[in-house]
Image (cartoon, rainbow, N blue to C red; front, side):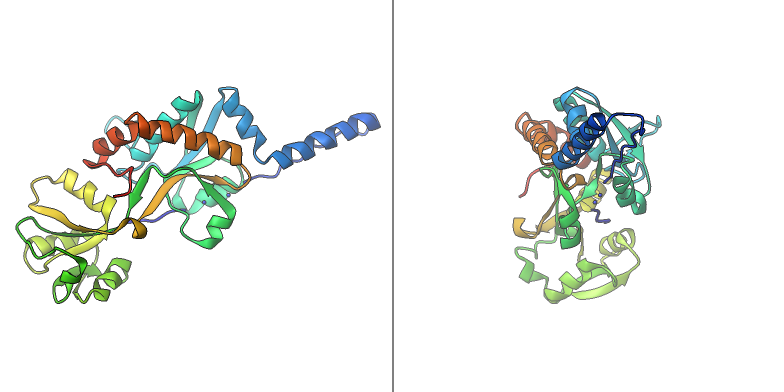
Length: 278
């Protein structure tokens, strides 16, 4: 599971020397006020019912991808559209590769990012702000439905788990005393569990829910879920200095949580409510 996270712009105004000194001072004051308000252009567009520009991959199902008709959709995309509707603004998505997301925010190609961003590192937390989370994820253990050995994480001791050797989930499984069966990725891990060559596999909750929704007859189920303290929330990410915008995003997101929109979208894309910590 990819894990994601996110920057802004400097505006400069060039005035002709033919303008009077009073005009120059007025322009300088305006520039200073704009900088001090931190993202006032974005705030004004939101207040005036304008357009917000949102960066996303478009190649990362079920979060952001193109359906069979070619329409851009996905959980993050539809949540963003719902937020825009609550704010009374239009939204324009700008698709870009993940590696270019930060640069896109830096250069103000877009105002914010909707692409499963958690801001888990201190460096990114210092540079970016995040709205109220619209999805929560954490480690889960996936095993055959009829296997009842998973009453607690401590029960993983001595069991075989199919994991990539470079995966954080493999390290977590080893911490609980599980024996690692090396695999290349999640697809192979699931096959080994189904073939009884491994007892279980650990991965991100959202990735596993996506699999279970696509393969409801897999005879596998989530046995253990990370506690809330070990879960991370993803939200809309934008550069620091847009406090009033973040407040408006939070208000819209809270309204979508209250009216059931986030739950409805979660169940549409994951078959479960991922918008709340559990």
